[in-house]
Amino acid sequence: MTTINKVLYTAKTHTTGGRDGASRTSDGRLDVKLSTPGGKGYGTNPEQLFAVGRSACFLSAIKVVAAKTRVTLPAEVAIDIEIDLGIEHGVHGLAARLNVSVPGVDRETAQALVNGAHQICPYSRATHGNIEVATNVVTTVDPSTRTAEIHA
Image (cartoon, rainbow, N blue to C red):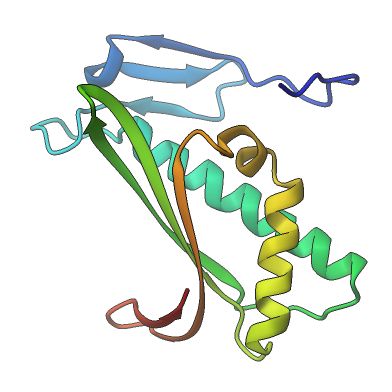
């Protein structure tokens, strides 16, 4: 278990209605309607929100590792993430796939950045050993279809 010695930020939200409800942050910057995945509602769902937070945090961790190791990242560095909601042994769980694109950086260096990011990203640390996570370094992406050549 991680023990925090110094709190840098506390996110505060208020949620009503569960998966078919609404959430808002205390500062008013986020106010969303929620819908069950695949349901009839028009809101987002917790898995989408988790994917956004997870990928943004992981990309920032890659930038930190790149700066520390003096690797210049291209502006096009990006993460396409997929979060699965499923059932295992009758209990709901999550799985994640992170497809990391670092154009112009050789595969070995990109993989080292990804490995380093897993060590410092708070989401990686929180989910380590709790959910199945696959991280893939993507070498080419077709922007029209978002299909990629993936090297696991």
